[in-house]
Length: 503
Image 1: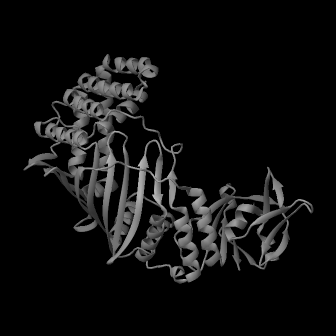
Image 2: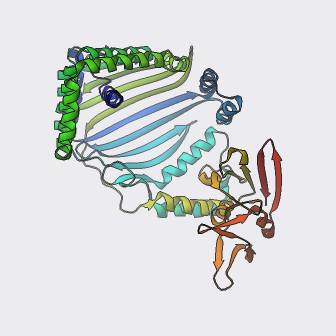
């Protein structure tokens, strides 16, 4: 029972982590309430500037790996991801966002500026009921920014035939469904005012004697200031406050959660278990105090960890929210430092006012799978595979092979150029799923029903390949690729098996 309580109380503390009930903090919460009440349909405009020093970030990651005792081989794999990112980079985002508070629907239209060049990132739509949708040109421009940042710009765009076919497809696709309602956790419609009142009530009733010490008044609004040390102390103090006022905190959170369940229409089916759980905890305040003492001890050990301390000590945040004219203005700055050196700096300015119109989702969209398949088809046509590497380790007793694909161009939208496949051993040779593996190379597998043979069309020729049917899936030996004109070589070293395939 204590383990179940501990998990539940941890979740409660996470939810109430930034609770505070000093007059200033209550004023800040009231201002937040006013913003949401006044801005049922809001329009926000702003900019965000992100600066990252990848040398310093790599240094922090390396320190973390060393302190954690990470094996040298694994550490080098992690650090390898920084090989193309070794300078200080800065990106500025300018955006306009329209949001409907009651439905939580919004649309963001953004542009990114990198090294003096502007990249339109198109529109991103979100709705708890309709999913998440992004314009196709956003994906393309994100690809271009990554190429420029890593010094691997895509000369493929200079191919007129590719550009014509690629941009024609982007226009045709229009918008891409990144996540539909089945892939997202559906959020029930709630009354915004009631929800805000429930949150305020929880803070006022449950945390009337607790303060974060992070909020102060400024002309027309409030200033929020926090660093890693303050966040650590706040969490420890929150645990201590809960230990000293267990019934008060539990009753306040019980009231909040009940209000949320009632608004979402889930109260009746959960009422009995919900009420019983809280009644049991409130009837045993000494048990709650013991759990809080244990949590505080665990939190102290966590914060004293060398890695955690390094990242916490380097973090700081400053923000202002003030009422301005007919709307509101917010300014924020977040910093992560490695000693005296800045690793990441994020600054933003945003204004908010009432919107003239709501959010209208686009009518025509394609699925992310459909877009990826067509994108790979076009990219593969002008940027074909030149070599494939297949690596496996039988000693690890996991029949998994790592597939790496090389192309003339490092086109970031070639997202399938690295993957893993389950293999089968047939007659002493490793066999891979034929259709999946051939698609990886840019070839298509077909079944000749009359001849009962599997064949591949390459350079206009129909070439039969031998496969084995295992559990309904056709597998083929990589040696079969020699029939298609590929050079196949095999090496083994230190338990690692590698097949190299060249066009």
